[in-house]
Length: 198
Ligand SMILES: O=C(O)CCC(=O)C(=O)O
Ligand SMILES: [Fe+2]
Image (cartoon, rainbow, N blue to C red; front, side, top):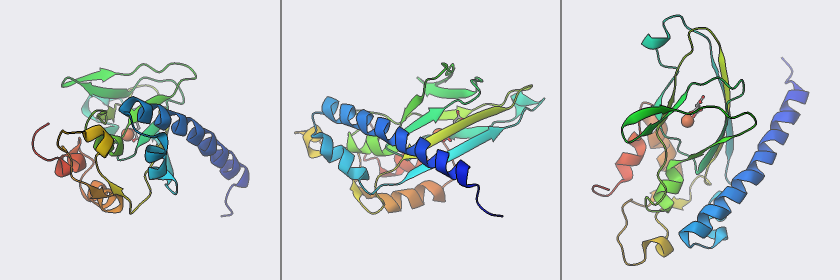
């Protein structure tokens, strides 16, 4: 089947526009960390954006199933669009699942594992999951900004100062292998690069 060109064009445009927003967010995060903006934005100069469309059909036994298993994103940042504004996304806060109410026209900004490592845990990636609705279908679109595969991701020296690193420095390509090599399950891949308890 020939690819649907208009669809590809609008998807590309969508991702390009979101990338501008992601760069602004990365600059703000860098400033907050006391790191030159380029130090952070350069981690994804030749980086990849992934777009995932999630379709979750209604299920009468919604209480007995889970739409998207608990996980954190491996990205730097993820922008999530809750397309049909139906509740379903939940984040884990102090050990409790908290629903995130969709706001019309607003994106959810998820901090990913890469920022947690680079910031030495100043920013924490958020564990989240998707629940199913008994009556209505749910649609969401996630755009993930990934660091360039093969770069080394470790805590920024500027953030460390005199304190010690809480995370190992990892080759991001290897990190992705580990991320996808384990079941989508809480913050497992990140736990593997942690140095001791944090
Ligand atoms: O559909 C949602 O609200 C969450 C989607 C998500 O976490 C993902 O695609 O990584
Ligand atoms: Fe996610």
